[in-house]
Length: 131
Image (cartoon, rainbow, N blue to C red; front, top):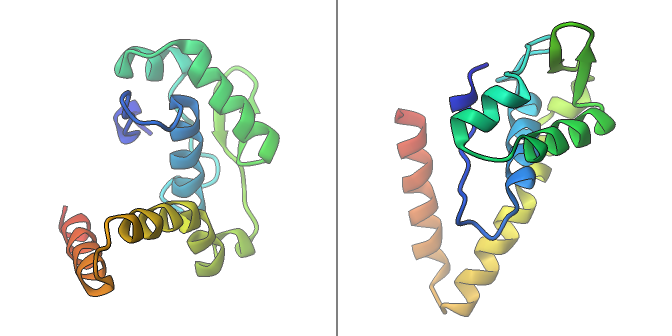
């Protein structure tokens, strides 16, 4: 894995460590980061994204405590083996639930019609699949 795989938004209301945790959790759950895949070092991620190394370390530690990552002596952090239920569509959709709730809440506040929001989401999904 390359440090550039992570997308850090410094201006987001979501803390940077949480952005890292959420992204790595999703990538591991989807199988895009296979079990045993070594992650870039804390220093590499911090340098690439110009963030504090303690922020990356906190994210890695939280994921290790959850069992998503394992510490490999002399090699750093790697993706832990996950049971098949953690990779089911339902469990992966559950990881998306907070973001979907936020979108639904914002759509209601903006009084946007459901179909317009869903059409935009479909468009974004299509763009992502072609990227």
